[in-house]
Amino acid sequence: MTLIAELFALAALLYFGNRAAPIVWRNIELGRGRISLLGTAIVAGVLVWSMGMASSSLFSPSDEHADHAHDHDHGHEAISTTKLSSQDAAQPEGSDYEWALPQGFPLPRVPADNPMTAAKVELGRYLFYDERLSGNGTQSCGSCHLQSLAFADGHQLPTGSTGEMHMRNSPGLANVAYNATLTWANPILDELEKQIVVPMFGELPIELGITGYEAEVFERLTEDARYQELFPAAFPDDDDPFSIGNTVKALASFIRSMISGNSSYDQYVYAGDKSALSESARRGMNLFLSERFECHHCHGGFNFSGSTVHQNSTFVEKVFQNNGLYNIGSTGAYPQVNPGLHEFTRNEDDMGRFRPPSLRNVELTAPYMHDGSIATLEEVIQHYADGGRFIEDGEHAGDGRQSPYKSGFVPGFEITNQEANDLVNFLKSLTDEQFISDSRYSDPFVD
Ligand code: HEC
Ligand code: HEC
Image (cartoon, rainbow, N blue to C red; front, side, top):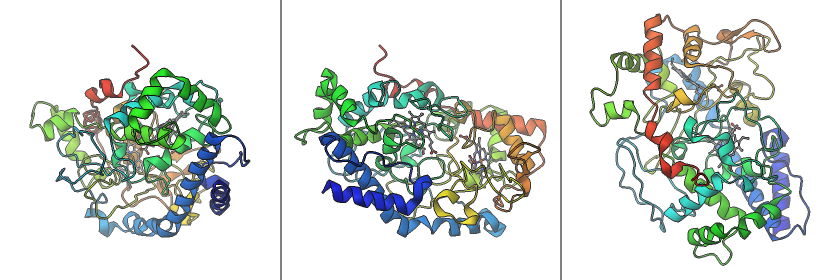
């Protein structure tokens, strides 16, 4: 069975090519022990799954969005397909988790084979902060996702457990449950259960670096008295609950539970507290929503993001846009390591298209953009006012304002100092202090 899965995985890998598939296959050999094989099978499953996805959706989204981006007649159409209402949809069978959702937040979509339970969320919290989950025991998920920074890390680019630098910035993890796609520009990773294997086993770059150390990692966890309680409690129907599959499920459940919706903005809009927003922030909100600034077209809905998915979603768009960061050699090119959606579709028009990230807690998630190449919110706003970034010299020289692939929603605009200040104050009103101090998400190994 496993061998067949491995062959499939290899085929999938060849299909996508090394760059597209984030997991490099190194340990194709039998006899590494049960856990290694199981891990292999899971990674294989993910890749095979991805392969299935490819034919159905990988190549279609870009065309739709090309319309949005280049055709300004669509300008008044909301890109996000969010419906804000009903929280009454049924949860998958087996769920005992009580969502305490903020007003205006729909019920997240949860896969039928991984219903939310309090016990899984609790196990996931321990695993998230446990350095023993990395190959060499030096790093946890929490090393690159800090609660005090809304689970971003403050670095331009993070460094993995073996010292390798990642090519993309660590994103915050607020409301990931609602993201239609995961990571900066990957159209295939549309479910946490698929994405989480990447930091665990991925080798381009190495993050936790478990590949090759599966048996050791699981020995460490299996021997721990706390996990001897937490794993069986989370997976009571499993004869042997210690597995990579269950580890992924618990981590996914924990990440899904990380909901942020109690910012000053929410208090103002949903709780009716008119004093929650300063006058400046209110002016900034109107600018954000205006057709002059266009921000809401790409950062829309309750999550201020490109597209959301939830229990009542009928049609889920996968939105990727080029906001004019690069135009190397006037060809529209982005730096080779980060071509965005183009890496997956090889479609010319997809050059430099990235997922418009949620702007919740954006004050805390600096530096900005997929490569952390903009340091402050003031500079981000200047970037949009300029209608793209002009890089005068160096290897990335080029005028992003003139990029042939830039979205029509980034035309540039006049802005006064006061307006820029107001817009920054609005963005800062999306900071949720409760989220970054909530003990449900904090490191359980501290205190
Ligand atoms: C070395 C730093 C590092 C480590 C360790 C790490 N991450 Fe990440 N994480 C990142 C980066 C960088 C990205 C963006 C990746 C990309 O775009 O390709 C990311 C993306 C994510 C996302 C996608 C969020 C979104 O909205 O799309 C999730 C979820 C996530 N990480 C969870 C985890 C979990 C769970 C672990 C532990 C198993 C983990 N991360 C370990 C750096 C890290
Ligand atoms: C055409 C769609 C589009 C429009 C319009 C747009 N953005 Fe963006 N935004 C994006 C994309 C895509 C990214 C990520 C780009 C990248 O990393 O290459 C982004 C990134 C950002 C970031 C960085 C977030 C982070 O976590 O790194 C901020 C802040 C931001 N936008 C604010 C704004 C504001 C303010 C406006 C209005 C002035 C605006 N955006 C208009 C698509 C858009």
